[in-house]
Image (cartoon, rainbow, N blue to C red; front, side):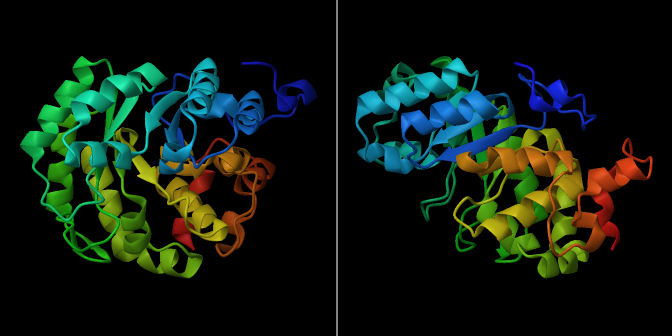
Length: 305
């Protein structure tokens, strides 16, 4: 990694794990940015991006441009996966055996095994078989737990309540089948915990506790916590911040927006304000440094107010 501006200036700053990192992973949604923009973003923040999801709008883009873009990501040691819907549709059409080699040819090296867009009941034996096939082709496999809507989601008892036993069982089944990481559906998390400061603080004794119990059972470092990129910017920001207060600044965050990589790193460093949490969200690392407590869990203050 090239010398950063912080290193040039000689300013003390919170540590950040380096790639290839086992935790603190960031996955972004590339929703169709031109190659020139991606090149600029990777030159500036490529060290902080671990996985990119080439989202569905790319299906309308020229193949040669998608290849050019994937090459840029690979040059910066970013793992590339197609959107989960790619494979959900391919599997529904019985074309997964044709599609996966073509994805490998494009440069994709991660496959997501999700089940969010269908009302059918998930068959974990079939999922395990598919995961095995993807791994034989050389793909790393990331699973996903939960659906975007609570109807037909076996991991939820209602829109705002997790079925903890079913959730843990599905996580474990995906890991046992060979998944490296498993995404936790972002729309589920925002409905269970909230996505504004008032609801998030109120959920500390309800939905948030369910998320904590599941994460402790599975292992926080194995879960990629999604924060929907389609929600308003302030909702995204406070939920990303909340996950850091729960699990630390090296929590795995999924579905961030490519253009917001710098903002996300500022949140991880505690150098960016998040309104609605009082002083807990007001430049927390800077205040901790001022008080001589920068080596403590300064990110967890929101849970105490």
